Structure formats: structure tokens, C-alpha cells
Length: 359
Ligand SMILES: Nc1nc2c(ncn2[C@@H]2O[C@H](COP(=O)(O)OP(=O)(O)OP(=O)(O)O)[C@@H](O)[C@H]2O)c(=O)[nH]1
Ligand SMILES: [Mg+2]
Ligand SMILES: [Zn+2]
Image 1 (cartoon, rainbow, N blue to C red):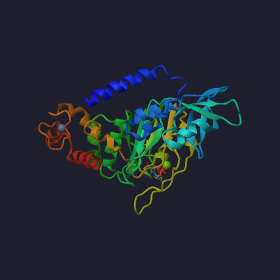
Image 2 (image 1 turned 180 degrees about the horizontal axis):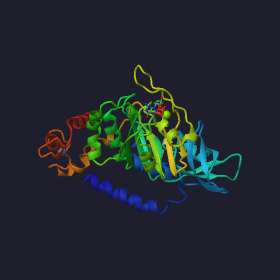
Image 3 (image 1 turned 60 degrees about the horizontal axis):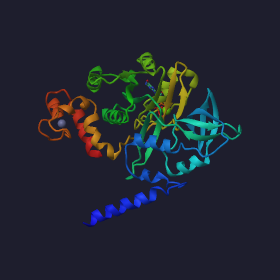
Image 4 (image 1 turned 135 degrees about the horizontal axis):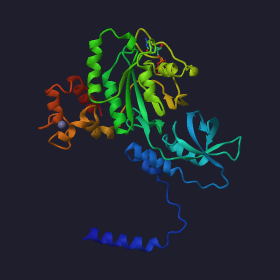
């Protein structure tokens, strides 16, 4: 049998070689970046990989990346002080090849031996990351934030109009990335029809998601929101113009971050916030304001998770007859049954189908 011969030959080869491997630099495993794998593993693997330090005479202190400037320049918080640090040449190599190497929120080791030229020498493994994917066929991953606790999914009731489909998408992403979601419906002062709000929100509340209606105009829900933000690191994300920055300014007036009117004509925000900056709250924890996004894309590879993590489905899919049920037309599908019984509104199921088919 030829394959058996081959195997024998390979085995021998391996044996003969093992004794001789000495001072051999293994090739860089960067090639693995081309292989699709779960983003969270990838994120931790890359930061681990970039960790090996070869330099000596370093004076390393721990810090956290608060803001990314251009040209591999970072604002790093070290013991409560903000300093500018550059990426070390060695890490830059990785950066050149991978955009996932350093993100806002990353804990890093900074070499402060040369006070006028501080260098980031290590990126510590991440405990979490919020990642989104580019639109192209390669779906390049973009790390929005590292080492955060929760995602404030910020929508507005009007201007721009509330879209539950976007909330569904976000809830899936946040579940896949093992983060905690908080749904915020801002500009609730623009509410006219109480019943309509109930129809849009009852399902999420029934499924146990924290949901707060807020207004920076009349203060509705702001205290409640503050309680959830205390001593946590939170990312504010959502469409442009929903009021992410306004909420932050309300809770921390001294920040006075720039905000802008939403266009009356198309109800679109002006993409006022252009950078992601990690900022401490005076009441404990951090906030990360992010630029408004047009749509949030999931990774194609995440498709298989959607039937399990779609809002409300996580408690149903195990009751489906088939363990790989897609809840489309399968026999004994608990999701389809729940929809027929009116437990899952048709709009949510429709949104599920749309999302599932889009990947
Ligand atoms: N009526 C009303 N308007 C609000 C509220 N919150 C914010 N706005 C207005 O909405 C507009 C957009 O607010 P921003 O805070 O800039 O929105 P953003 O989400 O940060 O937008 P980007 O930075 O572009 O992503 C501003 O004109 C705010 O004054 C609210 O609770 N009620
Ligand atoms: Mg903003
Ligand atoms: Zn099913």
C-alpha cells in the first residue's frame, strides 16, 4: 500500500530529525492569519504571538491604550497619566500584516527606559473584544474595542427612526463575542405613540435583555443608565446621530465632546465622532465613544451560530428535534412553533430569516 509506505517514511524522517533541531527559528505563524477561525481565538493568539520579547535592557511598565493616533502612535494611560508611545519596531512588523494587533482598550507593556521615546513592547492577551468585519469578500476584521465588559447598543426612537433589525444584528454579534448587551433607545422625548414603543420593545424585555429608554432632553432613564455603567468598561455603538456622544456628555458634562444635529431631510447623523477614545468615568469604569456606523456586518463564519444566538432563540433551539435546526422548514422546530403560538413575533422571525440569508 503506497500510503502506508509514505507514512512509514515520514515517521522515520521525523525521528531522524528531532535530535538535530537546535537553535532553529520556527517560521512565523502569521500565515495562520489567512485561515478563518473564530475571531476571539485569533485575537488572543495574535496578541500572545506578538508577546515574545527579544530585546534586553527594557524598563517595562503596564499601561492601557486609550486612543490610536496615526503612524503607530498611541495614547497610553500609565498610572493615571496619559503618555504618547510608539509601537516597537518588532510589533510594527506584525501591525503591518495584521490590523488586529493593537486596539483601544488593550493592556500593553511600555518600555519607558527612554523617556522621550516610549515604546509599546508587548500587548497582553485580551479577555474580550468587540469585532466587526469589513464588507469586502475577505471580511477584514476590525477590532472596535478590547477588554471591555458591555456594549451599549444605542438607537434612537426618532431621528433616526428606531430599527429593530439592527438591534437583532447587534445582539447576535454581542452574544457571539461573549459580551453583555444593553439596549438603549434614546430620544424618547420624541415618542408620540406609547403603544408603538411597547410593540417594538416588549419582546426584548420578555427575553431578558436590559433595555432603557433615555432622553438627554428631559433626563428619562439617565440615572438607570448610569447605574449600569458604574465600574464597567462600556462601548457605545450604533448609527450616527442616535445620540451616543450626547448621552456621554449628559453623564459626564466636563467632557463636552462634540455632537451635531441630525439632517431633517434624511434623518441621518453627520458622523460627528470620528475616533474611538477610551475615557474614564468619574463614577468608575470607562466609556468608549465610537463613530456611528452604517451597518454592522457579521462574519460569514458566524452564520452557523445565528440559529442559536438570535434574540430569544437561545432558550428554544435545544428543544428543536434536530440539533442543527436552522428553523426554516424543519420538522419539530421549537422556534417555528413558538412563532405560531405568538411567543415570537413574526417581525422578529422575519428579521432572523433576513439576517441568516444575508450571510
Ligand atoms: N430630541 C433629542 N435629541 C437628542 C437626544 N440625544 C441627542 N440628541 C440630538 O441628536 C443629535 C446627534 O447627537 P450625537 O450625540 O452627536 O449623536 P452620535 O450618536 O454621537 O453621532 P455620531 O458621532 O455621528 O455617531 C444632536 O443634535 C443631539 O442634540 C435626545 O435624547 N433627544
Ligand atoms: Mg458621536
Ligand atoms: Zn428549529
